[in-house]
Image (tube, rainbow, N blue to C red; front, top):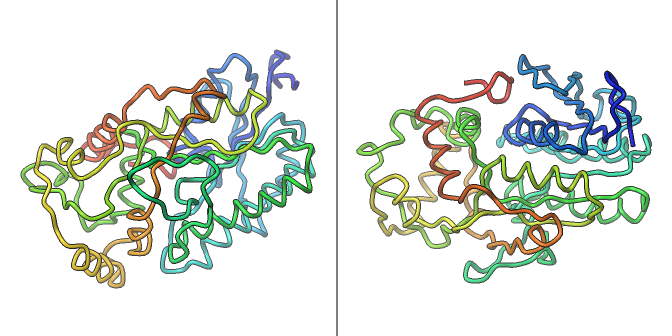
Length: 343
């Protein structure tokens, strides 16, 4: 067990890679409040002005020609790997370079620095298509939806970790597979990533959103980012291994989203909606690709029993509350004092 570098207090030293985004900021907060954690080192490409107690910062880049990660990881008890690049969707080689090659660099550095535990951010997007009428556990195939770069990259890292665990048996590997993650402070970032400037934030309320399209397959799971972070923290301090599904109830369909927005659902055919999104993406009016939209419609619903049983995890917020908080943040241009979350 490491010693706190400033006070000599015994406890875990944890390094969080990608500590300034939606998930990273919540994981940093969850770790620094955990009694078993002595210190947190946050790594990010740009050091933030946000300075939570018990946290140090260092600039680092996980890309193949990036920073010396081994030096940053040496002496750590666990590394939490969250760094991920969603854009540009028009240049999948660029995202592959960070999300796959960069992630492999992180894993290799963990092994070289002899860090005992690696907690990796996987996703519901790693799962192969599945039915919407029954949840699947962590044994469901993780081949992703091959047309979507995000899903391909998450699925590839699942295969890489399969081999990594065989080659590095001393490293305790945990794979977190959350649903869609929302909090108030992530609203501005997520609008930039997925909607761009096509839909101004103030218009995300009645009467400007008169209906929610009720599309075949539009059922997905979400949770509050802080709840996911609590599970990450428990995975760090416990002795668990393997994959954990994370989601809150209820599953979100058109009817539930319409209720949150105080509008009505409207059944519409899928082809024209998909065609409109594809045209907007090709014209660079929206950054989210139609292939990711296709993946969302095919995602299975997840059974989160293992996280409840082995991590003692219970989400404090419902999925509806998480989405409501995100929408409130969207209308208020909410953010945080980090580069990814800047309002």
